[in-house]
Length: 334
Image (cartoon, one colour):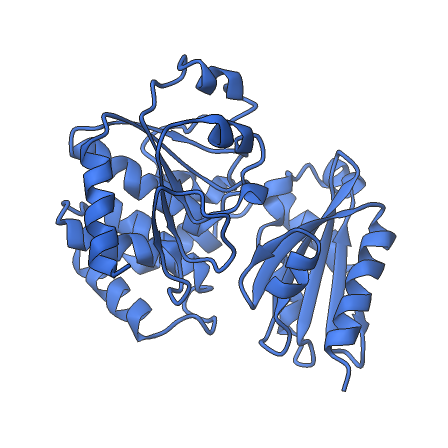
């Protein structure tokens, strides 16, 4: 279907709705948070009743993109509240930066059982086709970029705060314009957002120079677990529950810590294993392009992008590390 046809269907779906639930994947990153904040403000300004919802707590350094505290499923309300309409009498769900049940822990049954239409705005290859209408572009550097182009087509006003949220979405998912998904399309869009009032220097300070002491202590403990394998081409690190207890850090403080070992010149693939309270191990994967880590993650029920993906593995840590090592060794074999 042509892009404009999808845009028109999306606008019609929104215009026919009155009460809209806006959400994204678990462990929301900057792209997810920026998209949720932008959509929430734009649709409220258009006269819609809009309720944003997070499926797990966000890192505190993204909180500034929201004008209010966003409720978290399982903490501030239960999925049963959604089902009976006590939270919001929803007639449309807008799903941002994901199209996979595996990333919607706690909400998947609600979506499967609901007759409410879903609008998906995403940029991942992995898809469970959750939307009645889907604006999806795997060539886009961020879901925020897909969203921005849609908002421009719809001619909905983009305020300075919406522009900031979109800039956060795009800039964080491109590693502040350092990753290979940073192309001229990204730069042009971000330049337009700067023209709308965004101040990149101030956003950078909020995003990357406002971390807590607890996060730094957690990073030190993680770095002390660094192991290099396969002639230095594969780096693995891990964080166990005791590390959170000793440092006072939260699980959301692990975001982007995996990137630290990629400063080592020989590293082609990196993995960070984080022990979960339910006994599973969350594995974040990064690649410089030689290995498609989205394919690797998919083998274990996860997904993402070619150079940045993740999945959950059965514990304990050493078991998870062995599973991933075997796969990476095979993929890096001469």
